[in-house]
Image (cartoon, rainbow, N blue to C red; front, top):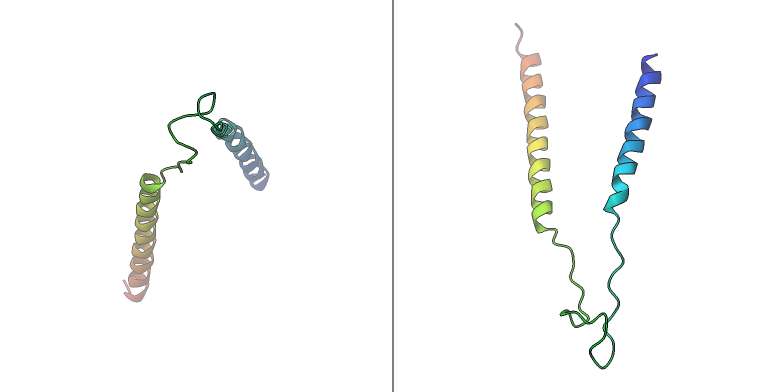
Length: 87
């Protein structure tokens, strides 16, 4: 019974995550600038495409990963030291 509930919980969680990711789809890029200037699609970019800024998010992910790894190492060392010392 426990594995049945666990399996359904995973399926429902996956369905919710997929449903929530739908609004995150990006829009189509704007049309390229027209030759001769003017008209629709001529923004201030002059045909250059700007990438997404990943610096802030990447830094946060690296910091979270480092703290998670440090926590895991701490727990492993604490467990090993506890097994070596008889009580």
